[in-house]
Amino acid sequence: MPEFRFNVLTQEWVIIATERAKRPMEFATTQPQAELPPLDPTCPFCPGNEHMTNTEVCRTSPTDGSGFPWQTRVIKNKFPALAENLQPDQAGDFFQTHINGFGIHEVIIDSPHHNRRITDLPFKDIEKIIQTYLLRYRALERDPRVRHIIIFKNNGEKAGSSLAHPHSQLIATPIISGQIQTRLNVTQNYLNENHRCLMCDMIERERAQNLRVIYENEHFISFLPYAALSSFHTWIFPKTHHAHFGRLDDAEIPAFANILFYVLKSQEKLLNHPDFNFVIRSAPTDCPDHAYHWYMSIIPRLSKTAGFEIGSNIYINSSLPEHNALELRNVIDTLKQFE
Ligand SMILES: [Zn+2]
Ligand SMILES: [Zn+2]
Image (cartoon, rainbow, N blue to C red; front, side, top):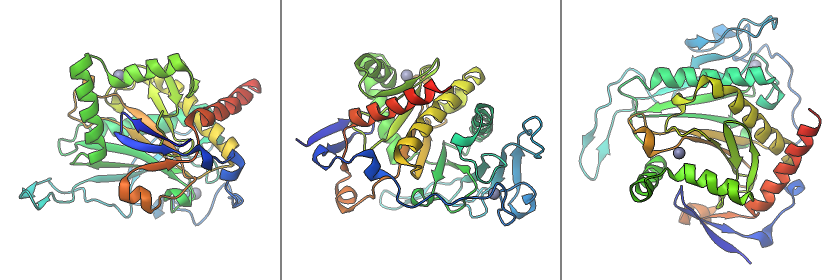
């Protein structure tokens, strides 16, 4: 029987339509993965082609013995959605509010390797990516014009990526999106009523039920949302409460790299390299630490948004999150066996 489920954090209803349930193989991408060369002389993100990119913001030191000039590189987006040299100025009236298009749009090149996804990299290289995210987050949150920093990855064409070389992006804005504002209202109301963090309580509940948890290590836990918007939609939560991604303790970086690897690898194995997006959902820069709890959302792009979703904002998920979680957990158990 189909079921409406309510996602308490996003305040969205989802239809879990198990009659439409598909086996993982039916989600599998039918297109074979294009074989990429380790280096591409025409790729602006490959080492040796640094002159082809926009201004470099920073780079991290190369892994010992790699022979490459850098491990990660941050550059200004060549086609930024927003302009950096502006002072945000809100104007207009109730019907027509506007702010000039101030914002910062950067690209983070994940590694010098043209053909290695995150899941092909050793843990220390995944840690380097996270260190780079943190470096930029911590630098930009000090800019008084910035109110929100979004770090994300579009992996594959269906996820909106236009360049094959693995990379992530960061956009800093002077405004807070409606999505984040909704989450903030929910966590603030919960805090007022219960004097506790909604996400800390949600983690406790998920761990106790153990129906949707797929992986856990010392500092992080991953589970599928009770009302997941789409099949295999996965959350990663830090167990230590912090509203801001930038407060992640450097000692917790290896655990974040570890859980990110297992979550992405299990999806990759089960769903045959799906295109995916991930987003770090951090609080606005001026949000007090007790009022929100940062996390990461990972969304494999298995189905397309259709008219009903656009018209109602109610998503139809054709699989049960509990089933998806079990399948991912089994893959991770197998991966662990061969460690
Ligand atoms: Zn490249
Ligand atoms: Zn919390």
